[in-house]
Length: 179
Image (cartoon, rainbow, N blue to C red; front, side, top):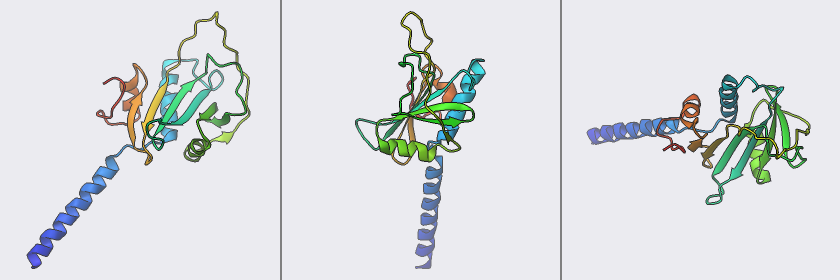
């Protein structure tokens, strides 16, 4: 009887350790890390990428197929915008950058503002309006999908996906748009 109890305790201990390792290896979304990595990546590639010349666009949207799953969208300096940031968007300051936050509903806005740390409110602002006679470079757009527990399951940033995925510390086998 004692031997069976010892074996059962060892099995339960092994199961507990296995579950803990699985939980620790799940890659959770960290908004500040994502934004910092995006800034570092782009500023290393483009000397004009600094708070004086660039503002960031951050969106959080619910997936249509599963409303609990979220899509984080990060880009910079909307070149196709109409020339102003409206009162519908929220503008915050982060590390000197203006960040325009846009969401598809108030719950997603609350989630973004709750988990995006070290920000301060800022005012809406005007930008150069879109000019159809100018050819604009498309900014690097980072998209990350995660579930309702914050576990990341998809990442995409076009041709730079592999590099940004590595910089963010995501596993190589995490699904991305390059596979």
